[in-house]
Image (tube, rainbow, N blue to C red; front, side):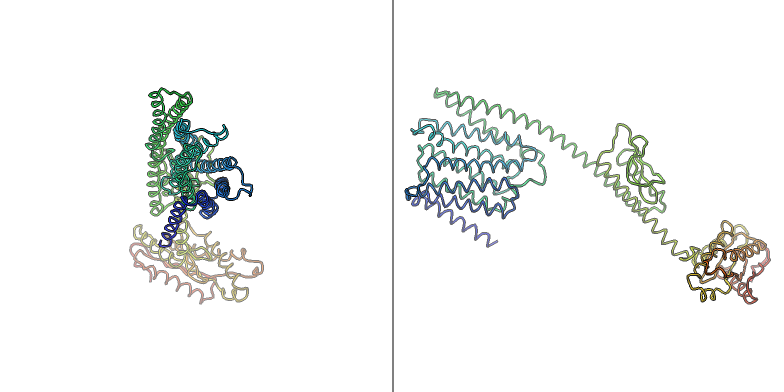
Length: 604
C-alpha cells in the first residue's frame, strides 16, 4: 500500500512539474506529456490484460502519432534546417491521431455494450452532437477571427468537433456499467479537458496560449494515468453479466438526454433573441430532437422488455425454489425407504408435483433419457432397470429448466437405488456363504428360530438334516482345493434342487451342510434325508473332468424339534446323529425320532 501511494505521489509531482514548465518551455513540455501517454499506452494495455487487439493498436497508434506531431511542433522553432513538416501537416497528423483514439474508445464501448450497441451510438451521438453544436456556434461566431484559407479554417474547426465526439463516446463508456472504474472517469476527463483546450485554441484564431498548452498537457497526463491504471484491463473487456438495461441507472440516461435537448434549445433561443437565425443550427437541432425521440422510444421499450424479463426471472426463481424443495424431499426419501419400488414411486410423485406434470415409475428401462414413443412422454432411466416417466399434456411442453430438474431427480433416485443394492449385497454377504451362496451359520440360526416359533403356533414339528461329506479331505489333498470348491458348489446346487419350498439349505463350515425343514413329520424327515443322500451322489456328474473318478457319499444326521426346543440344542442333536452315522461307516442317514407334537416332551 505504501509503495502504491509513493508511485501516485511521484506521478502527481511529475504532472505538476510538466504543467508548471509549460509557461517557460512551451510545446516541448506538451510533447513530454504526449510521450508519457504513449509509454502508458504501450505498457499499461499489455500489463493490465487488454487482450482485444483492435483496442490496443488503435490506442497505441493514436497516442504515438500525437506524440510525433507534438515533437515536430516542439522542434520546429529551434531547427528550421531539419526540414520539419509545415504546421498544417502536423495539424492533420494530430487530427488523424485523434480519430484513432476515438476509434479505440468506440471499440471499448462496443465490447461493453453486450447487445445494446444501437443505444450506445444513440447516447454517444446525442452528447457529441449537443457539444458539437455548442462548439460550432462559438467558433462560427465573429470572435473566431480571420483565417488564411478554407483548409486552415477546417483544420482549426476539426479538432474541437472530433473531441466533442470523443466526449460523447466517453460518456457512453461510463453508461455501459463502467461507472465504478477510475479509468473510465479519467478518460472522460481527458476528452473534456482536450475539448476545452481545442475550443480555446480555435477561439484564439489558431494561437496556442499558455492556457491552451496547459490544457493539452493536462489531457495527455490524464490519458497516461488512465492507460496505466489497473482498471483499464477491466474497462476494455466484455462484462461477465449482461445488464438488464443499457444503463444501470435509467435516470442517468434521461439526464444526458435532457442536457442534449437543453443545449440546442438554448442556442435556438439565443438566435431568436439576437435575430441571427442560422439554418445549420436549426437543422442540427431538429436532428438532435429526432435522435432524442428515438432514444426515448427505445428506452421505454427496453423498460417494458425488462419488466417482462424480471417477471420471467421471478417465475424462474419461484420454480427453482420449488425444484430445490422437491430435490431435498427426494434426497431424504432416497435415504429412508427400504424398497426400490417405494423409492421410485416417491421420486415420481415429488417430480410430478414440482413441475405440474404426471410422472410415474417404470420397470425394464435401459439406455439414455429420451422420448418413450407414446405422445410427448419422456423416460429417464434410473438404476436396476427402473425408470422415471413424465407425460406432459399437449399444451405443456417440458422446457430446459424442467429437464434439468428431472435429470437431478433421476440422479438422486439412481443414487438411492444404488444404496439399496449395496445394502442388499452387504446383507446377503453377511448371511450367506461366499462360495456356494447358501445360508451361513447366522442365517441358519435365524431361520431355525423362526421355524420353531411358527411350530408353536401351528403345533408342528421342525426337522433338521445335517450332512457331512465322506472323505472330503482326501479329495482336497488329491485333486486340490479348486476341485474341492467345485465339489462343494455342485453339492450345494444339487441339495437346493431337492428340498421343499420353504426349506432352507445352508453350509455351516467346510463340507458340512444343513437343511431346515419346517412343518415336517418324522416320515417326511426320513424321506428328506434319503433325497439328501441321493442329491449328493448325483453331484458327481457336475465335477471337473480330472475329478471324474470321484465318488461322493455323505453321513446324514436328522433331528426333530418341538416348539419348546432350543435351536442350538436341535442343531447339536442333528450333528450328534450325523457323527453316529459316520462312526458306522457313513453313506447313510439316521432315522428321525418318533413322538407326537402336542403331548410328548421333545426328543432329547
